Amino acid sequence: MHVLILGGTSEARRLADVLAAEPALRVTSSLAGRVERPRLPAGEVRVGGFGGPAGLAAWLRAHAVDALLDATHPFAERISRNAALAAADTGTPLLALRRPGWAPQDGDRWHPVPSLAAAAEALPALGRRVFLTTGRQGIAAFAHLDGLAFLARSVEPPVAPMPAATEVLLERGPFTLDGERALLRTHRIEVLVTKDSGSAATAPKLTAARELGLPVVVVQRPPAPAGVRTAPDVAGAADWVRRLAG
Figure: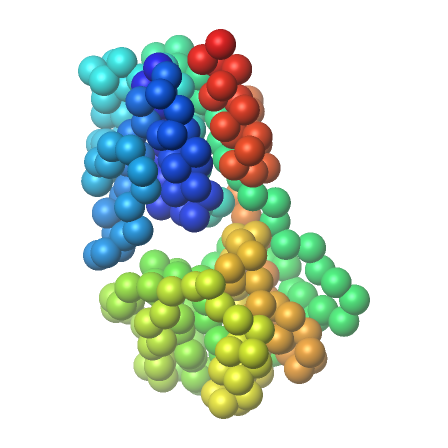
């Protein structure tokens, strides 16, 4: 049974490790190729896009894929939509692995917004020194905010446009609570901006912000495409594949 995992997340790597250990399964992970030195999962790996839903559907047919797992980032709307269309076109069973989002706790000063553009609009009223953790592709949405100072953290260097006053911090999680506390204090951060990725590896920044009483602008995640079955964790996704395999 050939399983294609649309990956790039820690859950996708763990899922590939679990499934590749089963002799009855052939596992291929597809990575977008945006990270220069990605952590490679077990099994076969392909890098690069498919060319939209038609290209993905053609790949599914050409490589006799029996099950498709969308384990991409919760904000990877385009590939998730393409996966749903390609699966419907080819009749390939599809499951989306979606870790639960974060939930506010007592003491949090969260400002939920529907988009990066809305986050940028909310910022001037909340603080001047901004810790931006939306990934390198999200920085452009804040480029027009010349009156604010940004500390932008990403795995890979961002590209223009960026705000005029931007310091880039190249780091990859997981991050520690002590490290996040020190970072917020050292850079005199007044407001945090994040996407609701739900990742435990990046959650310590929320605790640190709560302890310091900082406002947090939280970009809400998009829903999975209509009609697509979801699983909240690696175990649930692996069980789904095993049931398909019989």
